[in-house]
Length: 180
Length: 180
DNA sequence: ACCGTTGTGAACATGAGTGTTCACCTGCTG
DNA sequence: CAGCAGGTGAACACTCATGTTCACAACGGT
Image (cartoon, rainbow over all chains, first blue to last red; front, side, top):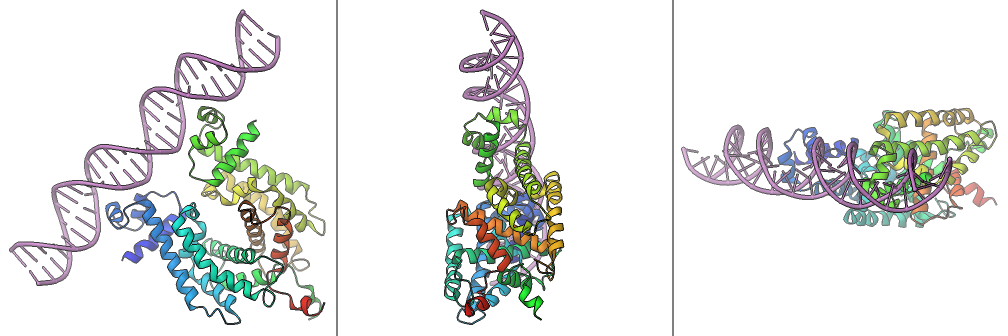
């Protein structure tokens, strides 16, 4: 029940980041007093949501074999599947100013950055900074989640869209088209 | 002076979207009363900022020759140069719920979408929806602006980063590397 | 020197969100 | 049955952003 509360709060705050605690409580079908009992302050609630999302990311990171050849593909596919609960980390305004949450994000970014760096020159371009590649990846995830929520993109198509766009780009590959 | 006020307000609200009008006025070096005189309400101020940014985009769109072969490259390069004042359109929370602003965004999106659609099959991949390509483009711009503000990316490098990443992707092109 | 414009600070009323307390209810367990 | 844990609505005080009014100062043009 507590878990469900966090999820409902997440989507409520994602839909309207300025929603009051009363709105959140109502959306979760729970009294405002109860909400306050579980999360004493607003920032406590937001921090709990963020940490819940970060737990999900952390568990994904632990499942990926970073030594595998297709580690990045695997990672992206799994991250896409997490959906809105992780989207909160990218979308919620001001979250980056919560030092505690921000520090944890940086920590979780590190292994991915290392992976990217290691793959540069083989699977990944060497002429771009690792952080740029990382953020390009995140941008793809962001676009996918946004499109899914808007109903433009089927969740099943999302991983393929993200991977092919981020990796191959949007330019028409004339070599493939002209020499079939 | 009025123009400078809008710009200062833009960066102030971009740095902290929850900043009060008092904070904005102080950042602009102007009395809160004066701010209220020019923009009667908070939403009026935000809408003015958004419309100012949209004016910039509109003027860029009018400068681009949509019939040219490198129309997209030209467009992206010009948009990157607009910088933070347009970043507001992508970053400011809740702006998408302002129907007036949102309608104008859709209007300005349209010619770009048309351009993309027209180029699909020649310069652009045909196997991706036009809206996906558009949002990928926006994602690249977003990343660039964010990196510039954070001091990770030199403004002069930004257009190249965005274009090469969005068009070619981040995968190492073994064909180009192995057969120099 | 006069006057309209523009900006300014101070003060005020208002409304909304927040956090807290309290009395009460429900269901379960010993 | 007694008691306890968890949940609830009502009510309250408090803070803060907002919007408005007003009297006053600076300035430029006539």
